[in-house]
Image (cartoon, rainbow, N blue to C red; front, side):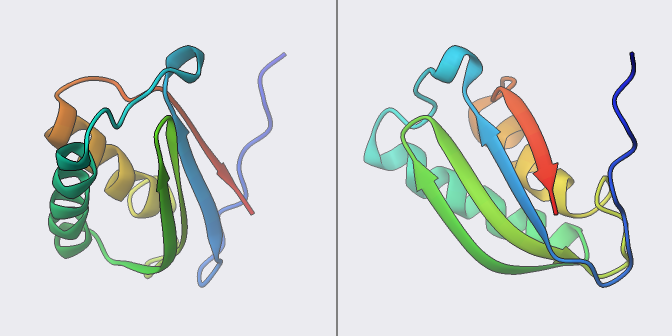
Length: 99
């Protein structure tokens, strides 16, 4: 059975997270965190998103954000995935967005 469509409301605030496959470490050294934050900053310049909070942990990250245009898939999730793709050049793992 396919999963239900995610809520996607203009002005909605979302909790986005990304975890390493099988909960593997995605940030292996201090430089990984720094590089992620640099690329995240670039992603925020490319996509219309308000970032309210974030936390980076060795095997996953969380963000609380609001896509300005109300489209999560083009805004919020893209910012985080952009950072993973640009910084690590690999798929960072599972991605989930929850209201």
